[in-house]
Image 1 (cartoon, rainbow, N blue to C red):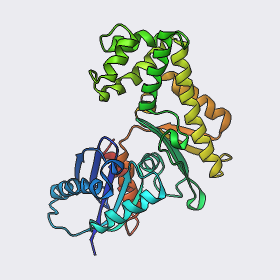
Image 2 (cartoon, rainbow, N blue to C red):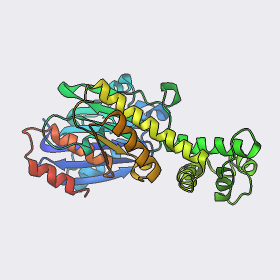
Image 3 (cartoon, rainbow, N blue to C red):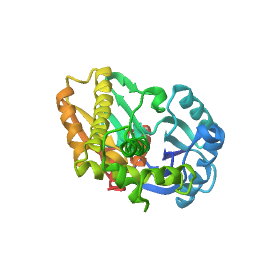
Image 4 (cartoon, rainbow, N blue to C red):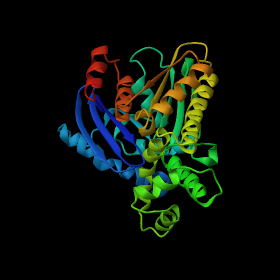
Length: 330
């Protein structure tokens, strides 16, 4: 048996991983942070290997230097998109002996748990729009709504990386005449100290501008849209449409359209609360899912992982434990 009264929470994204060791009274005993979690790139076993030093660091802060397992481990992981991926990751993590019991879910569920009330039946939908886009939901009786969310292959549209590429596409066509005129054709190259889109295309293609800097174009797209550019505004409106569609379809699948239901919104794009995106999205939700109650959540997703870990410990923690845990990330 493991160390009763303790649990591990993991939120692992594409760019960073957070680990928290907690007690069932809501205290955080240890924390650590590492790099991204990418099983599709390095394989399941090697990806899980990257969690080992982070878990050891969190345990070390709490003075738990041995390898006695904790009571439960809740892991919310990027790239746990398909059921087969969740199964493989669960088996790999369980085999490490870090906890008596293990729960693995896609990291969007961490956003959902962070935004839902503590106690009672978990009911709600979460849409994350950060580097990518995803949506999950929980309904009555444990019903779950999911999308594969592995890019255009699974019908997805949007997210920060996608929007950066869309801005480049629209700007290139605006400059060469294949598309409508747009201030994007001037703003994007100017951001990198260049005069034309042709120069920017060449610099990106020849890697004189690192691929990692493409993410800088997403806030620029929103800035150009805010200045009234019709092409940029159309892209932002399309992003709002996609987020609204995800939320509405999830609510419909869960038979929650007829009752007040939280719609939790998170990720860098949504957390920025760009007025056009936020206003258009809330308007669309009011038309299509009038009982939906949208909330933007900016708490780190590891809070959701920690709350889930607390949910699964026995006996059930008292309400003050949840308040104490939430205060750790207030």
